[in-house]
Image (cartoon, rainbow, N blue to C red):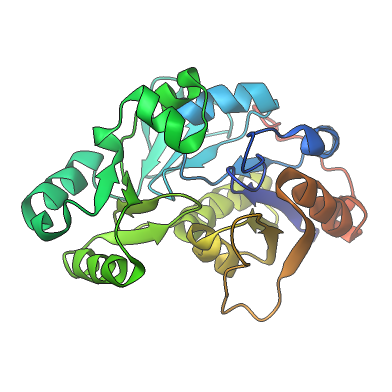
Length: 285
């Protein structure tokens, strides 16, 4: 029985360039994957609002995992039947994995007073301030601020205090993840758990085994990379490759989307997994 590949990819610093947020170097590979009906599934810290817009820009119509594994959005009709454990919201079937953002904002306000001068939360940023920190355009920054399940924090203190803060919030039930720029506080969910849940839905739909191929560049991708059948680490211009427990990983030579395209081409488009797949009977890309 043939296994069908699923690509789960981080966005910032992986499919999008760390500095200018371009994906130009990956366009040809994205088109080749679409022609072969191989799903490209974003698994990102980005928000629903950001991803809905970005999916249109990139030209993909797959489900996507948002806010570091907190939630999955599946276009209604993408699968033959609504997956168990989801509810309808707008044009999507939604699977939640953790409490809403307000829970974490309350926890910070009530329990982390000792650290309040050492970080700036997204909820405190204006659009202009976020643009300055991230170099996002104002329209994109506005979308980034609309979060539902987690709160990114810009750490201002030293590394020792940051570790104290992480340990303390973890003891209160929070799950802390360091991304490319921000420290994220959210629930006991991660990109790996969300990926595995969605991969099982695909396997049921296809009625064949699936092979999960994960790509990421930073520490908040580690759970996804550890859980994947094939783990691809994308070279970052700002930090070293995070250390993984997984014995074998593929590491890109190029940065960001250029490295993404390089590795997908080498491991998928020119490999035994490259056989074009039939589209799903309902809504598949």
